[in-house]
Length: 102
Image 1 (cartoon, one colour):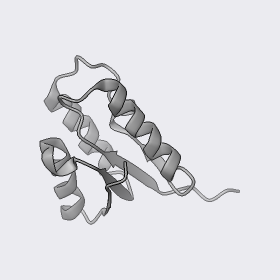
Image 2 (cartoon, helix red, strand yellow; image 1 turned 60 degrees about the horizontal axis):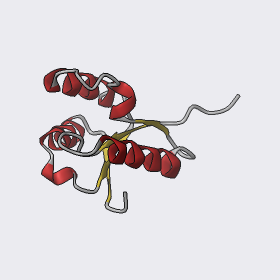
Image 3 (cartoon, one colour; image 1 turned 180 degrees about the vertical axis):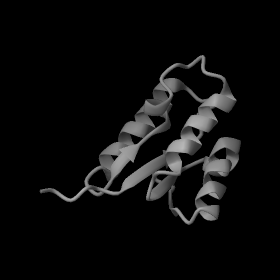
Image 4 (cartoon, helix red, strand yellow; image 1 turned 30 degrees about the vertical axis):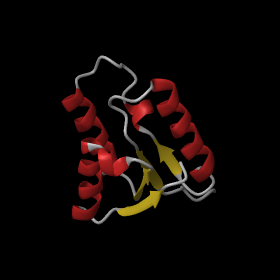
């Protein structure tokens, strides 16, 4: 039986960014990390682009709390949502990884 991979949440700026670029960055993160992790992205958690921001964040934070680690992609420090996800990791001792290449 294959050992279950740890879960990795991908945090990246989404609001105000081109959807195709966001999807491409999520796909790149999946490609980079899927050999070691079960990768979870915000775009697969919230597929309806009309979902209110506060609901999107609630869905994402709820999922983040089930993860073993989170990777923060370039630009995360300029995003309120990513900052909330970062501090969630710090408060709940979820490993946080910064990846400025994606």
